[in-house]
Length: 204
Image (tube, rainbow, N blue to C red):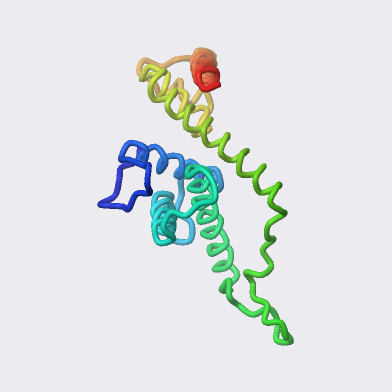
């Protein structure tokens, strides 16, 4: 769970508990874009989340629909912006770098980024992203609440960190065979999926 920074502005209808939940889902939204918990263009995941929150606050938290999808979209866009900045730095170009010397229209690098594909496509993308983040949030909760300490350590090492079952088994005390580690991972994965399915049915 992510900690609340000092005194952020909150939109109407969002209390401290809801803020912590929304901020954690915004973190997952950034991680979904970055594919790892790393520093991009000099900023880390939570810095991007805080930047997104500050941006929404400066705009008065104005959204055309429910707040959570809006917050996830802003976090997602900030994550994409960080990747674009990193990519631009690699090529020693600013996003505002003019394209070519014969450039009557004043086009810059940022103009090459594809824009919206239309309101319907944007809505479907947003719904898919929201559903994915909700499932990631449930999976995160399941790993934390439904797995024993050993199951959690083994599951995270194999499934999330990509270690081999044999390597993880050798590091345990007492050591386990790769086959036994695989069985623990399968059992833990079943618990995580069952939890997500149960929560999904409860929400229907």
